[in-house]
Image (cartoon, rainbow, N blue to C red; front, side):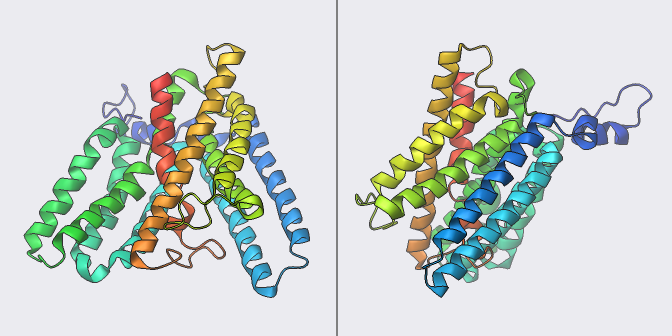
Length: 344
């Protein structure tokens, strides 16, 4: 998305700025197909809630409390994402920015705020709104290309100028790693809006984002459910003991099926392709999201194992912290984005 500073003749620049950031069609109306998709998500969530409540009848009090807290959190997150989709790019930028700030806050607490110091922490938080402002109002291509180098220059230069060499390599690397994960990688979910210029989904511009989030979260849930039920072949016992081959394959099967069913309305993957080719590409996107979702999950588990904690925080009852909730998305967002670019 690019902001043109030159307003049309007779139009104030402020009005041009507003129209660019907040398109009239996204603010005053909602795509009917998108409304049906969101309604379907809540219907599925309702069904899942009822099934979970019935399944908890014989569980212990602690398990019941944890599962019900998790369900409550899912409902809140579903409402927040639904509201964000109504506002299109600005809404998605806001929720991703908030997620980045909260995750960075948890991350700093885990790696040791005493080593980073307040100046570095303040700069990390300040970078988030600047990053999304540039991506939203000017040119997200510049953000995508320049951000890794900018992070290195800003954080490296700041840390060196402060003169604190105690734990310099670890703290500086951790700061840059946090920005790369929670800001740069995650922001690829926002960058999906650029695909609407050539192949806008039936559900509208935000369909790409919803597709990614829906598949990523479904994959997480199904990998956990299948893994708990029949998981026997441990894949990463030292990093995440509960991850199993059965869980990975079970989650992947459901994710691929959902990808094929939702791609025609949420993405442009079927555009200008035969039905068979469209199904194949959609299924492949489901495999990509499932595989990289698994890798994103165990990547965050590795971070937490390194510092000796189970959850990033208790921000989201029943689900840990924000970094626990978006762990898979930090990998699936760039993986799916570059997958779509590669096949387009």
